[in-house]
Length: 465
Ligand code: NAD
Image (cartoon, rainbow, N blue to C red; front, side, top):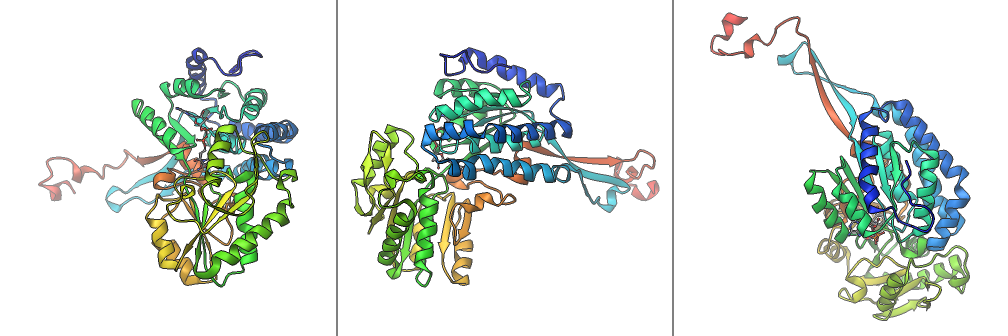
């Protein structure tokens, strides 16, 4: 199935969208996506795409976001390969029907839970990890036996074009399609019937997706963002803490949904932590990060201008340099930031790390709880009591101690938000849960009619026995 127009027309025509979706739906109806052999073959083909076309994808990611090949591999291409390998290794056991016990009153009978694919699913992905966030959900959709349509972000056009070109060349194009486009194409897609919509992006568009899903009563997964705090307690090794925060924050120039958005520095940790953060930045990206091959760029001028305005609004402790032509913003630390400063109003989604002082853990917990539930919360502490308190007294999509963003790389941890940071989850078995229906099956023999006691009239039970 061809989903893209001839050269010169970058986006899929909106008039082509209904027939593309109809084609996918009839492929699903034909049953071709259900056999485990098809699922395995598609996953292997996707793995081949990622390994054979790695240079093409790296080039696209560099064009879109200035990603280095190493970062492109670890956070995107290799990440999806790992997800595929893990899925291929465990798929048979994940799909095996699960026996459950039957109450005595219904015996003899058997009961089991069976996974069935949902149908044709829509995956809408954002620009910041355009390979990972288009293909990791696709791994789950395929593994669960669905037909799937992927709509990458128009804001990462090189990667979108690469996926539109490569996916039909490697995968079963009857059942898996890529549609390119922005708002008009997404809107046209949302008019169509799907059995699941998997959306990754911002909360404003999530509301549009959710409203559109009402029409066909379509279940949705919303993978959103928000301000993910990092709480730093006195007594921790601040040099290690700073290096890990800098790594989590400045990977992909801060354009990571689970990047530590801001630091809550407890007690007297703020100043020494700020110094260590400045040192960590120099250690990682040199005196002039603009020249570091390991440091990315801001996606476009709109986001550059938004981030520039934030830089103007507080005290810059380290970094602060920028170049609009190059879409470069230096890894930046802002110190002594007030809780109501502009940089604390919305998700930063760029390389600016504000440090906010709080007197104690109680204040840090209140600070977190007074705001939207974050996608991730990070704790840097030596105290098990603090870990317990952060676990039980706050709510977030995920919680990690000692290391930001890496929980994504633990395949069997579900990944998703809560409250304003999203609904639903994926990765590994969580993807199977998302992209399939768990169908309860009860099987009672007709041979012995043990149900007589339940039939009306129910007053003379004894006579029936
Ligand atoms: P984006 O602008 O690329 O939008 C995401 C997708 O929504 C795109 O495919 C886009 O075409 C589509 N879209 C835009 N407007 C639409 C409309 N009116 N109707 C239908 N579809 C529309 O990306 P973004 O939203 O700027 O992404 C950044 C946000 O995503 C941040 O908040 C970030 O935290 C979040 N995010 C979350 C995760 C996660 O896994 N939870 C991952 C990455 C990013």
